[in-house]
Length: 220
Ligand code: GRF
Image (cartoon, rainbow, N blue to C red; front, side, top):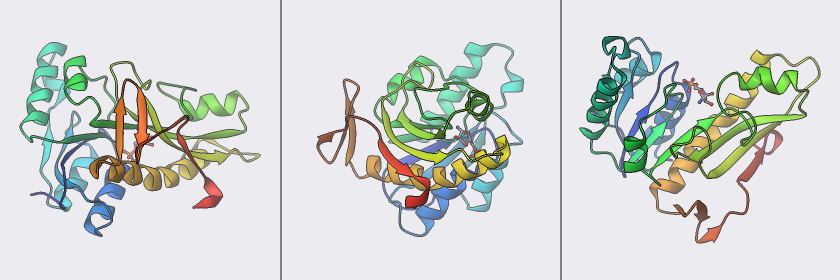
């Protein structure tokens, strides 16, 4: 009921779970040293849960529809995550704001991937926002999670140059291909102890990052 070897890792996901799949594929191939002990979702129908089951990984849903009271939902969600005793918590398309208590408990051990070049465009609809602003570059950012939405210390960014005639769909496809590269990479650094954060300063191999590591589309 778990996959791989390494620090106990829980992935939280609400949707299709393509990032989860990339994480599982890298783990199964022995390129990512984590033990994926469970996938938690607030959406029972999330395809991410099916992906977990197909890989024989524990799939736990805490159906948000069953909790008219947000505080009760937060307690159940916290219980679901904590019952798996994770060392690391990875948000992979998890679409709800987490309670501060949960976030603070996993400070320095919880990552998120957000489809923009943060600090640009926290929140939703990032592709539409980048296109309507006429941005030359768009991309995705892996960052440590803090109670402020999409605002935690940044680790690595994947950058793509916006092409003429680009649509939200084409841009999303290109950016997501990069997510499958940078997210397992960052998780691997965290899992092996190479990546740390202290007082908002991110260190990789002992060096403080002045800015997130940049990966451009053509480099991969
Ligand atoms: C990803 O593109 C990620 O940037 C964002 O949500 C999306 C999740 O997609 N946080 P998937 O569920 O991994 O396919």
